[in-house]
Image 1 (cartoon, rainbow, N blue to C red):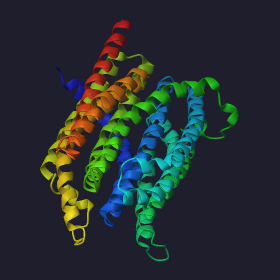
Image 2 (image 1 turned 90 degrees about the horizontal axis):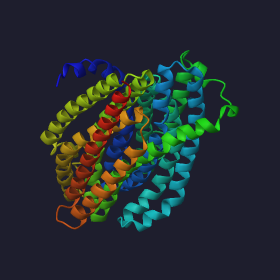
Image 3 (image 1 turned 90 degrees about the vertical axis):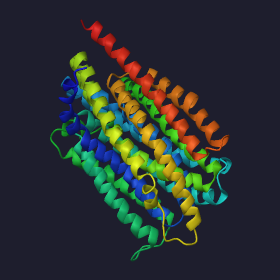
Image 4 (image 1 turned 120 degrees about the vertical axis):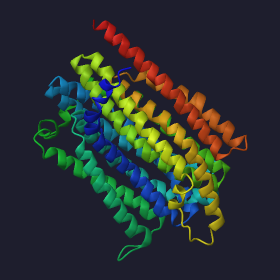
Length: 458
């Protein structure tokens, strides 16, 4: 294999992907900051925030997954210089994302009583309920923001989302500090303060993104003087046909990890807190693959618009190769530092909870060893899914993810986690099995599709 043809693409891949990676890291950092600051209050509060966020993560996966429908459509119209089509995609996409945000908030709000029937510790459930209400409300501005972000990504303008996330992170840290601990004139709200910090930061992120894009000449023809009259049934259906399978594909993966949170809670507070620590770290490294996945979606969408399928395959493989190299480095880091990283999340000077904290740190370290391996599979599958979305192929990938995670992965997690002595580590072996299956099947699907397109183009 001549690797040089792939290495040549690395520079442009990085230019396109790094702002997306930083923006996505920013989203994850909001959660990690919340976990660290809430964890300093206590392990029970950390477990409660974990439980509440598990519901919100499911909803976010659906919202963000749905919004990704805009990126390949915009990338295709951009390479064809079809400005009218681009405007139709944004206007109808923003409307749909707003509806999705409100719908997801409503579902979480009314499904909150389910917390009582999930086998979680009673004290954890009691703390999780009020936290959940506030963070769920932040879904509305979050999904609306995604419409702006995905549109900008499709135009290969990826830096504004990075700045928006930076502003959101700074806002979140400041609000957390003021509201959790009751600094200056602000009330001491404990973990609820972290929930308000998340809500405020996400509203600000949407506001910034709107004004940042509408102030640029490139975006003015698409984003200004929007009217409900521009909503068209045909475009709404086109976005929905891609958006719903894309949303479900994201949902199946995130729900697998949320299932791991719930299973960990059934084992006990130690397992749940350890799971949350390891998951926070794995989520941060996952953002690199997510950013590269969007880059694959944009570049594959552009090449599809140009009809250059040989170049399309080279581009996708170059991003896949980058992903494997990056995640090999992360895997080594997780193995080397697996005993030390968990210490960042708990108060080592807490004499009252010293034994509990020691147990959490030990279990979290074991989980990071498993994460070192599965994140390579995770990186491969998410980048390949991005390439498939660039081809606007969403239905078969949706079925692949369902089978991989819910026929292979989750049953393995249940058996090894609840019915063997492996406990939380067994749950993560199930995650490894599901992600590896998704990586293999997704790549086979991409290879088959691209070979067929190349043959038919001759």
